[in-house]
Image (tube, rainbow, N blue to C red; front, side, top):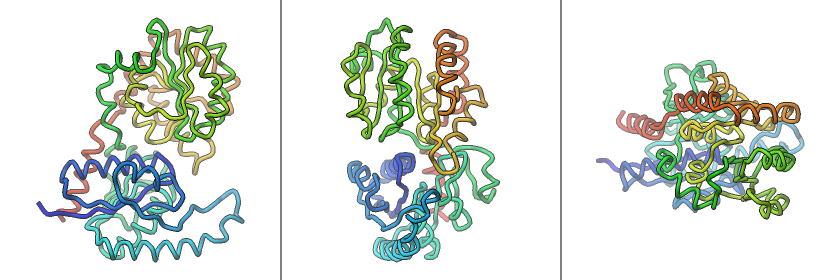
Length: 364
């Protein structure tokens, strides 16, 4: 088997980083001699997360274009030029046999330069509404792996392969972990458990919602695993002393958190949506309105339109949350419908499917 080198770029958010790591791990499982180099953006979370996962990473001096504050874009042209030069230097030194991008600022220069050198390139798009980087790269990419259908309006149809999003493998068999999960979180098995997820940094509006509904949850015999995020942990950690409320900045064993949950409240980032389809628990999505192209709302709407989840916009939380949540916890029929329908959207073999597309490119 011919040894190959893969350069992988994607970052800025966990939604880009974790799929990139999943693909890297799949490449290593397929052939342990594969050399992998990550390329990220300076001072972004990938510069910490990737080395922690055991991979080398180099950083580019790149940042996204700021739509809301144009004054912050003064250095953007210079950063882009410098990043293209850095990407060229990195590719010449590493000499990859394939370039893989999962979105984010840094993947633009890397995949663009790789295509100039004739290196096969693959894009993995997680969202139902693509980010600007992947849309710009689409014409130069050889293969575009997507998680949602109907993306031919953004990408060349002949390049699209519907694979799903890569997800952590430890969430595939959760039923066998229920007892361990209850013990890990010291849960009362006579009560229902609500898992609240706001992403690694946290979601301010979701945290405020949970804080305002603590008495409501208590009245409904609901215990909480509340991941409030690193940014908000100091604000909300005093509630950790409340009975049936666990406030965490980060959940290391997400498989056990999912196994313990009866209901989930979550943002609608692409990775979260893909994982929750596999988890197949009743979900309320509260998408962030503060992301590019409002793609979280698009992700959540795709699932909600399939009657596989409940979608509540941030602007509707005050007027709709209690009614929607009460209906959910009181109706086993609704719970079962959501669980059945969301499981049908799951793609448990997504990582292997993407690996297959990588291997196809390497064999051409």
